Length: 160
Ligand code: FES
Image (tube, rainbow, N blue to C red):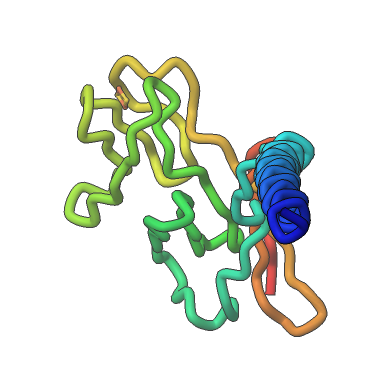
């Protein structure tokens, strides 16, 4: 009889411990889920884009009377008699990437046929504006830098 009395509380204690541990486990899972969602909610939802300022190398790498297209950066580096300058390679009509046509001496858009001179002015086509000039300068190391986010008035050359 005595043995039975001592066995029951031991059994009940095990059940209590089991449910307590089950409760703690459930709370832990809920807390972990809440922490994960809170972290996701509080972390900034930002798209990191590359810098608009790019180093296009030494001026000597652009021969006189050359037009060099940097497809990845969507710009032209042009070395004319007046000096160096940079143009956007993005068509002002609907944003297609233009291409330099050395045989014709023009910049042409493959999408709807807009054509531009080397200085960005429009020759023909549906483009509403000329290709914009981009800010260009020489840094302390003697490299040409282009700020793709800054348009400048035309005819501002970098002279070396
Ligand atoms: S996008 Fe260049 S002409 Fe239409």
